[in-house]
Length: 288
Image 1 (cartoon, rainbow, N blue to C red):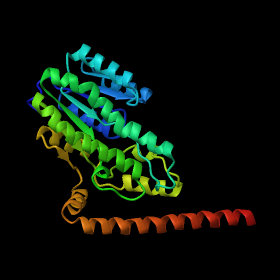
Image 2: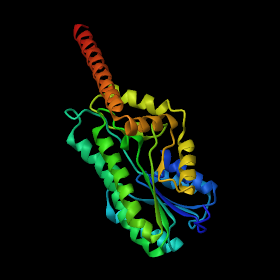
Image 3: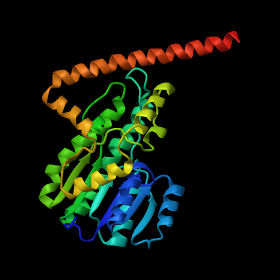
């Protein structure tokens, strides 16, 4: 990325999963990395293990639901580096559940972190980039922001919001020489599944299997993210099979909607099987 000779990147959610893989990839390319997360013990241990000076890599506690944390992080970055080249808004969580089952608290939790966390990051760093007349905002969305599976309403809505925000910022920031990318990976092995909320524990197990079964690792996604930013691609879609589904939605919406209805019926049948299994187990315990 010759357009950023200072090589300064800041990443939220950098203590695990895609955030950590992205940080490691940038470090391997000679970049200075500002790690941010709420997992302080893990984040501090990771940065300490690098054995690099603070000017090369540092960790700071940043809860993306708190503007003051993001502002303090930005001030530290400017103090150390004099500015920033790339901001990666990566911190995120997930929740599962149908519209009648998923509690509103889960909706608020997901939207506050996955969407508003990105909004806060963009809002706090965009003025810096505009003053510099350079910079890049990389927002981590998901294929869920482009293709909306049943029973993932809060996650779909939040990630679709990230895509919409990113598209909006292209027009707002390009006159200042500031670029924007939106990254939309599908399932891949990450810590997201372990913290996901679901009213149905059995279906949460299914989610974990989907994440673990991906052919791409977090390191693979991070590499494709880096390449996409370097080539200035706006949409960065690391998974080829999910790209096909997105194209189906764009060019054959009727077929896409029928596939979503079919998926909804399958999920309903799976949920009923889970409920029957739980009921049988409970009856067996009562008899015993």
